[in-house]
Image (cartoon, rainbow, N blue to C red; front, side, top):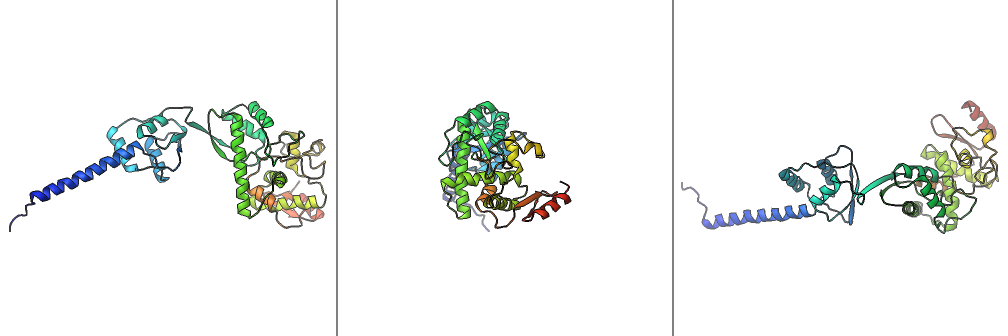
Length: 341
């Protein structure tokens, strides 16, 4: 049997085929190196956690489908054998950056790119927010509070000099990524814009239309619900108690509002605290407090908009963090005695 000998034409075609594959690889390789990030936005947020290496960052970006080709990027890094030392932080990177530029950005602390993660828990007051902003090194507490007091309030906020802060309740609690050079006014505008987005979401989720003139009442109720509730299932029930008491022209007697009126935290509201002369003291005055007593999250806002339909006018905190609800005063007193209050 004759051995097969490929013709010169087949050899040329085979070499040409390999050349096309090699050229295609080189083009793809260069394209990936020139633009390693894949994102529809102009900028991308990349977090470098403590102790992470560049491969860790690449793996996470790959899992998030934010890399053009993770394998080719690792091939490039393997060829270069470059010692990359990342700095912990949160970075805002242009999506058209090259691989070398990306590495350089994450290796060097650059105030124009490094961001601060600001997390504001639900229920925080403006003074709580100011302390957190200061702790993050964005601005001082004094600067933040000054900016809050002098900020132009939106149309849906009823400006009143008797309020502690006109913007209380409307700086939405969330996690924000903020550039180091941002001032207090920028932070306030971010939180206000987020509040407006959340209100639109509440309208969509509840199939409701919220009028501007109703927003402050809703948020005032929501702020009390936020402070009083420990479990989500209690939120609409606490809300119902507030509305039921308002309807019956009863004092709300919400401890959280008294604590806000005091201006400092107490673990237990005592009789000596109840006499404080403040428009936030709903033990002393009927109706809602003059304004919100904190900045509520979306679940409390929904509860304030759509309270449960109940006859409850009393509630008391139980040992498991939930509340006991009743419409009977004697039942309330018995429960209070049973719980050891």
